[in-house]
Amino acid sequence: MKPKISLITFGARDLERMLSFYRDGLGFPLHNYSPGDDMIMFRLEGTWLGLYPRDALAQDATIPTEGSGFSGVALAHNAPSKIDVDRVFAQALAAGAASVKIPQDVFWGGYSGYFADPEGNLWEVAFNPFTDLT
Image 1 (cartoon, helix red, strand yellow):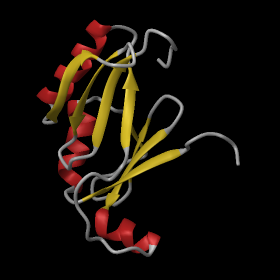
Image 2 (cartoon, rainbow, N blue to C red; image 1 turned 120 degrees about the vertical axis):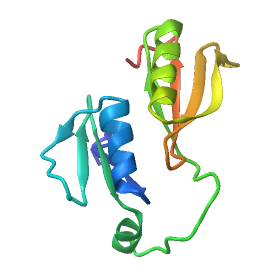
Image 3 (cartoon, one colour; image 1 turned 180 degrees about the vertical axis):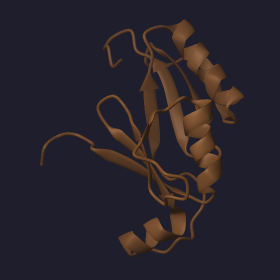
Image 4 (cartoon, one colour; image 1 turned 180 degrees about the horizontal axis):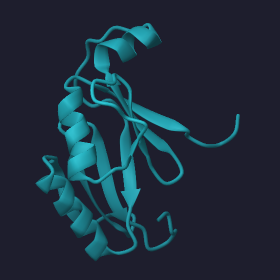
């Protein structure tokens, strides 16, 4: 298997709200979207983000839709400085994200914070002084 992630898809309970958050709030660029589409794709640098109805995604994977709590997954956006982390974090909150952990110096020597999108998907925004992941 080639070591890359091609597409990350969130199963969305409210597709329109999630579309608005990522498109309008965070400024993610849409790809080939028409109003009413079930599959919404955003072209990112190096990968894609998809939104798809949660029930349909669970059905496609042949798993139950029930479940709550921590999913064990967090996406990360790395920024080139602490100031940029704070800027991105503020943008996410202004777009409707919930603050989970305000950006701060962390045990591994970097600087990071966490927000949750409107449906609770976790994003870490981080500055890594040891490895440039930007």
